[in-house]
Amino acid sequence: MALSNSQYDSIMRIYNRLQLQKKHELDDRIKEVYERIPAVREMNDEISSAAIRSAKQLLTGDESALQRLRVTIADLKEQRQVLMEAYGYPADYLKMQYDCPDCRDTGYCDGKKCHCFRQREIDLLYAQSNIREVLKRENFDTFSYEYFDDTRVDSRSGKTAREYMKQVVSVCRRYVENFEQERGNILFTGKTGLGKTFLSNCIARELIEHCCSVVYLPAVEMFQIFSREKFSSDASDEDRDRSTYLLECDLLIIDDLGTELVNTFTTSQLFYVVNERLNRKKGTIISTNLPINEMRDEFTDRVMSRIVSQYQVIPLFGEDIRIRKKMMEAAGAKTGA
Image 1 (cartoon, rainbow, N blue to C red):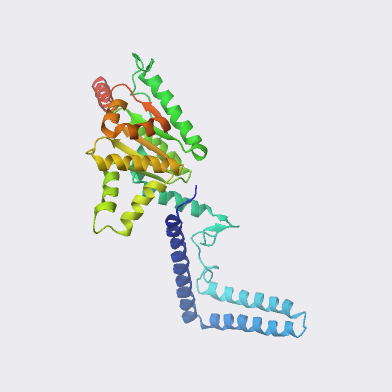
Image 2: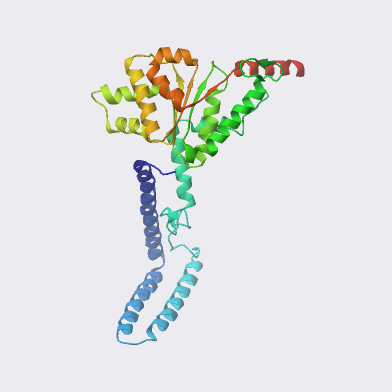
């Protein structure tokens, strides 16, 4: 996935600073060696002088000058190395020390992004997603079905809670697999504690690992960002950048829609975000505790028509997983006692 211009520039600034830092470090090492072993400076000066003499000789037609230069430089480097080792210096002390020898701290190998650039991409995307620490705990690898009931069939889904959740997780995994081609949208509905946010985080972690830009934020915070940009007299460039990035990131996760104060502004901004991201072919995940009919009452038919027609609606059913987990852990502790 392509980074935005500002994201790319921020990574390249890291490489520019790194190159400058490594150059300063090399200059300091050279200065140290020259002060401690003056003969090394003399040898380096002689290598430079030999190169100049060889260039002049080549211009006059002396074809053997290059070979003589190679022999001279090899001899001087060998003498230099022996001398430095006698003073306890490693063989590469006067060479540039790169953080990444593969790309030499440029970020690119053979015209392609180096593995260190890819890692910096992922680090940046995690940092900008707002959920770096959460995703260490909430992802497909840590997802467990044991807290979902497997004894009672829910009439709404025709399955037990565990069977239905396995089906939902499969849908979420397919969403990730097809994201690059489809840039789909999901609406998770259901009461508190059924796994809406956890599933969103599972998807977010997978896409960030594939270098997609993901932003997670509660609906309240999203509306505050747009409100500050539009109405605050001291709105900064950073404020405008944040609101722009909400429209440009590969995946936007809007959590807990409906918990904010719904008014004309929030309704219009929700339509703007939903519609703009659809037009830009960017993926969006919305989670809400409200059922569809109540969402329509809160956010108008115009907004909900756009969402229902373009989003995959995934209702979640069952018991509050957090409460069920505590009860099962308490029962286990009692049995163990």
